[in-house]
Structures are given as structure tokens and as C-alpha cells.
Image 1: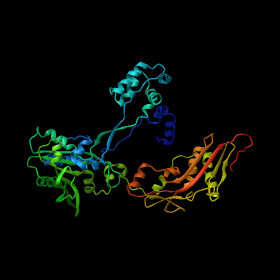
Image 2 (image 1 turned 180 degrees about the vertical axis):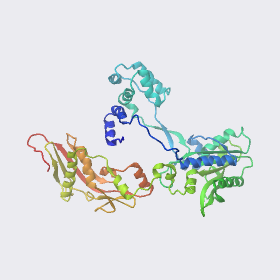
Image 3 (image 1 turned 90 degrees about the horizontal axis):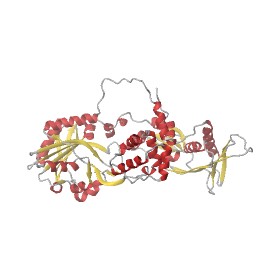
Image 4 (image 1 turned 135 degrees about the vertical axis):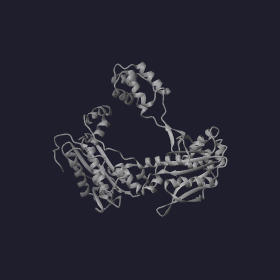
Length: 512
């Protein structure tokens, strides 16, 4: 059974990515067989998307595929003065520039150190073609390998070592946006088809929308799906649209639709012509759709001559209702479909960012914590030897006169209760077995144990877990934030840990 040593792989990759990339391929199993179950389980979201497609086809809509990337000017055409507010929640797209990459004498020398027979003229040609866009970015390594007759690891090293300017490229913003609502793209489709299709023109599209939400939580996703319909006809009205909407909802299993005019109409709808739709489900009235008639101003800006009705149903919202799911993330992402994390699981998931690898390093960490605890109330200036073993000397120090050696939060204990992480002067809730000084001492010992030079490790005010050399898995952090719980560590520590190498026979090995 193969289980990777993740820390070791990451450390090796930082030191030499190319060598580690090649050597770790040997860690993968070979000549094995893995049996799958007879039939897989479909994703609930995809099932509902398919059901939505079938319903809308049955009602009489033709399916369309809409644009995903749009210029921000489209939003201005739809929303008018309100556009700037709407664009605040849109994702703008950026692009990496393809700058001119020259081959100086130094670069040529570096390239030949990596691949001594490399054809410099051919390399120049490849770089020119890449600059022009004749070679796509994901084909560049392949072109280098094939046309220069080098290995893929040599090609990777060329890009990393000889052309570091490529790593320093930063994206440049553009006016392109990802659609934040399906309506944004219907105008193009309708404008193109109004002279080529018979009326009424009834179209639907089921696809993603992208919203720049401040955070993803139980009620918000940055990517969610909409079943959106439009009906264009010279006689189309909101009254006719309501009847069509009722039939769509009936096929989903909803009855007794109720329509309420929104007090604040979106500007791409006509004034007073946008409504929220509620249906009864399990004895309660729940919002299931939004409908409206497009504003003649927005239609005119896209040269559309006929009235257009639009209705949109949020697929994730619909799934929460139909499948009785209380968290929209559970609809979309499998990592949120598992059981909630207990306080014990959260506590055990906290790990050190850096820690000593040797027994000696672990002893140094213990010595730092014990020395800091023993002398924590001593008044500065002061310093205390925590460890000496003939090769290094480690001290805990404070130089600012009148201060204590360790700040008031130095030995706060890290605990978990009710899904929140917090600190306490004594263990409470579910204790992690960690305190502020232990995390700091562990990080300092990781730095010191392999060092042959003077080092300084300082921690002042605590604001984040990382200030304490602590980290959480991303899924658990998202769970805590999504449940609107807290990661509440803070306070003043003001600790300085110095280490220096010792030379000369006058220093005997020993643990102080």
C-alpha cells in the first residue's frame, strides 16, 4: 500500500523540483488492479440539471448555449447607471503578457550548462513564435523538447533557470468578465436570432453563473447554476410569462405559485415588471424563481425589436428545497457532504507549519518552552540560556527595559468549543495540547537545529494561527468560516529567541 510522506516530498521539491518530479514517479504503484463498484452514483446537481433540461424541452423551449465571457460594456447596456454596482460582484479576467524574451550571452551560457548541444537559433525561433502567439502556452515545453531534442526535465529547467522573467510575469486586467447572470448573454442570442426564427421564440439554457461573493458559506457560492428561459414575441407580456412559469413549476412538482412584484427592480427589467415567484413545498411558501420583462432600453441597446420575457431558476436553490439540504455547499461539493467536523476533529487537525526533524531539535523546543515558562516574569533587559550543546547556544531574551521576558499571552492554551478555535489562560473545551509558546518554540527549533549561523526568531503580537507556527487543513478552515464560527487567537507575546554557533573546546556538550 502506497502512502506518501507529504512533508518530505514538498521539502525535496522546494530544493530541486526537476529531480524530485522525476524521482517521485517511482513512488507510484505498478502492475496493480483496482476493482470499481458495478455502478457509480450521479451527482445530485447534475441530476437536477438533466431533469430541468427535460422539463423545459417538454414545455416547448429550444435549448441554447450562451456566451460565458462578456465585455463589461454589456453590463452597462443592460443596467445603465446601476452597472457599476453590478460589476462589483463580477469576476474580471486578466491575462499574462507575452513579453519579449531575449537570449543574451549569459543566457546562452546558462542554457548550454543545462543542455550542452542545444540549438540556440532554434531556441530563438521558438521564443519568437511563442511571443507572437503561434505557440500556445501549454505547448511551449513540448516544442522545446521536440525541436531542441532535449528532455522534458531539461526544458523545465531552461524555463525556470534561464528565463526567470517568465516566473515574474504578472497578470494584466482586461474588460472581459465572466457572466454573473444568464441574462447578460441572452441579449446577444436574441439579437442574432430575431430575424432568423419564427415567433414566439422560446429558448432555455442551463449553465453556471459566476459571482464574486465575499465568502462561500452555507448560503453563498461563487459558482452556481441557473435554468434560464426567454420568450420573445410581439405579444409577449408578464401575464403570459406567469402562465408559462406556472407550467414549468408544476412539472418540477410545485403547486399554487404566488407572484410578488419586487420593490427594487433590476434595471435590465422594465419598471415594475420584475417578480419573485413562491411555491408551496411541504407546507411552506418558498422562493423558487425570478421573472420579468426586459426593459425596452436594454433591448434597444442590443437592437432587439420585440418584447422579451425572462425567468430564472437557481438550480442549487432548487436542490436545497427538493432534497432537504441545509447547506448549498453540500449540493455542489463532495467535501461538504461528509459529516460535520466535531470539536475533537478540529482540535486534532491543528498542526505545526514547521517542526524539528531530529531528537536534538525536539529537545531544543522543549528547552525553549521550559526556560520561557520559568523566567516569564523576569524584568528586562534580561536573557536566559535555554540550550547549549557544544555547537550552539540558544537564549530567550528581552532587551526593552521594564518589560517582562514573555508577554501576557505567551502561555495561552489553544482550545476548541462549539466549532470555534480560541485561546484561554487554562485548558478548556477540547484542549489541543498546544499553547502559544509551544508553537513558537517548535518553529524556532526547526530553524535552529540545522543552522550553523546566528539566527533570530521573534514573535510579537498574535493575530493569526500562522503567527503561532500553526495551520489548519483548508477544508476545516472553510468549514469553520462557513459555519460563521471563529478562529480567535490573539494577544501579545513579545518573545525573542537567539541562537549562535559555538566554536572552541571550552564549550562542553550538555543540555542546560
